[in-house]
Image (cartoon, rainbow, N blue to C red; front, side):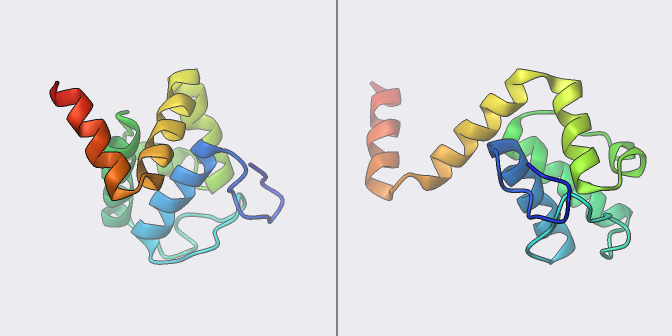
Amino acid sequence: MTTNGQPVRADALGRVVADAWGAALGVDGLTGQDHFFERGGDSLAAARMAVRLRTALDVRVPLNAVFEHPSLGGFTTALRAEHGPAVDEAAALYLSVLACSDADAEALIGRLDD
């Protein structure tokens, strides 16, 4: 992940957070320097972003986190500091599941049902 104006896509957590922010704000190509509220964010968008991250990473993201860390890079760093290595592992797993084909997903589900 970089915060020097380059897209925040270098690691799994950076990708998941950037995607959640982008979906909540309705924008693509966010960088580590992007400011949530300057890009049009409000408390409702913050709530949508927090729900997306909870769903993707299974972590609680308090709404005040985006107020305390309004830049994408700072928010990602704070999320990592709060939740430790487990959040990176969850992000990598989430992205691998998203990348599965339907057939692969059905095979995984079939193994879980056995």
